[in-house]
Image (tube, rainbow over all chains, first blue to last red; front, side):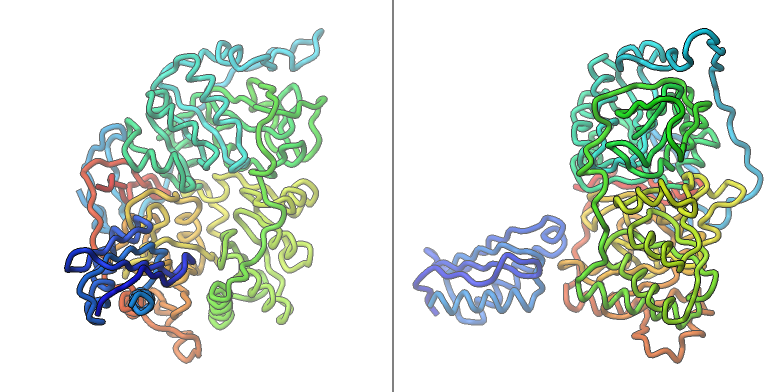
Length: 89
Length: 520
């Protein structure tokens, strides 16, 4: 699956996350996650891997994914990532 | 060294001293001796109006007359809350005088005290002890180890105990005084900076070497009733333009939460209290002023009205909600340590059944009996609870200081039933943990955790478990709550800490229940 444009999904409200995907220049998926440090310190790695795996499962091979978190749970992160990717293809 | 909760720290902490480890909530009672206090008697002036000798024209004159010097401990109280000007103006003058190595023994520190950070950096302030601290610049400065000595967090009852026993000596007490006369009678409920009761400064006025009334409302002798601190306690009076910003002192009326999850939690807590038989004539009740905590009072009130129940008293920090219950006759009296809103300030000034209690009367474990001992129901908040029901209200799970004991461990130890109410998930964080980041209140004093995802009863309370065994309430156990939460959030990665101790958390009896280390 190839991304052709930049697309965003999600919201900045508590419990949500804003996911922005861009076509990658090189193969591979890079994830740039920002949010409250209390969350990132304890769950940052887990959240990044959820985003990456969601993209990979959809067959994305190259992408830059920016995420602005406001304490979302994994199911929200998966849904927002999938939505952003589908808007970008 | 490890205390009985398995918390580890050195036997001697630099800047704090020898550590007495926590030995259990109910194991340090018996005979106690208080220290003596220095006092300067005042000769009758006879031919000149009394009071002139107490009035200081400027803070410089005040400092000269006291002979303030490096290394002193200054006492402050926080009833002006986030509007307080007194702590900042005193420390500014101290810094301008070139004083160093001061100990700020404030009962509470708020966001408005941000200027203290510079004085911490420059060594004017090297130690802070407090009972409450709000998340903000000073809390961050302490977390990042800027203070030369570790901060000391004591409960609202623990601070008076420390002063009375001599563990902490106050050299100069600064009493923010909304109304004061020239001989030092102080009224807290009148004046442009009225804040209500002045309860937390009482031990300072009894035991400090010097007591200063700082006022922006000097009135003719005698100050109007109710006089809270009398002239025999006060050495000097300093008149300033403003002791506080009314917008930061108190909100108009404190309202019960409208968050449906908070209401649901509060409703189950009230139902549990009813089923367990705590809502009955002569009952007493204390809640926090925030969110779901206050909502429990609202649901308890409904049940009291429905059952025709008349309670004995409400206690603690008082809100308009408790004032209303007093007016309605649902409670016979209020014991107030702090007015949270304008309705309670007004009531404290007018209604004799709305009574002031000093910090010592409120929670001092080594007195002849604190009011918390008479308390039936205590509703508490928590940042974290662990599988042994230990509660953290001091640090976030990332180790950053965001609060202090307040009356938490005084009330949980004294009350017949101490209930923690909280959302199970706070953002992405599950508040039930294997081990809390910092212990404030020991699990043996916490009876029930009520969350939006179920209720856990401390297994030590076999009587409660028995009473509620046929209840329809969503009662589960604490381990299941943790598993439910972690299924949604995932397992948190451990936060790493350095060896540097930035704060010592004392239990109300003066033993060390935990320490806060600087996060990496």
